[in-house]
Image 1 (cartoon, one colour):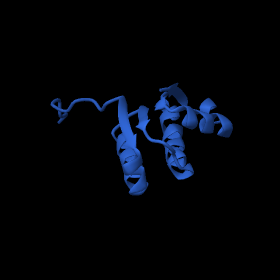
Image 2 (spheres, helix red, strand yellow):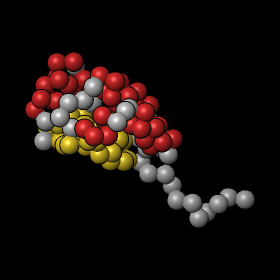
Image 3 (cartoon, helix red, strand yellow):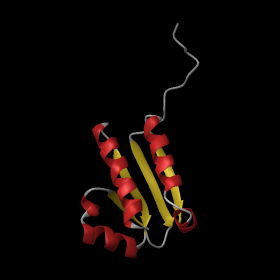
Length: 103
């Protein structure tokens, strides 16, 4: 029997990040990203307006999520990136991987 009361999974999600969340450890970020992917999200919009610096480990987690989402026709968008963060993404070449929206 088909359950018709269940709604389809979301196709996009906004994930706000803060320095406080990133300082407490990246396991929570990885769990959040994995849960979004498992729910069928294909476009993850990461709001970094509350983030001063982002670690390479956090970028690696976002890159892993981007790879999965790209296979589904989506990707990861970095929204409200500060000038400093935009420069880091440009220097590492990740501005060509992620869609980056400046603050």
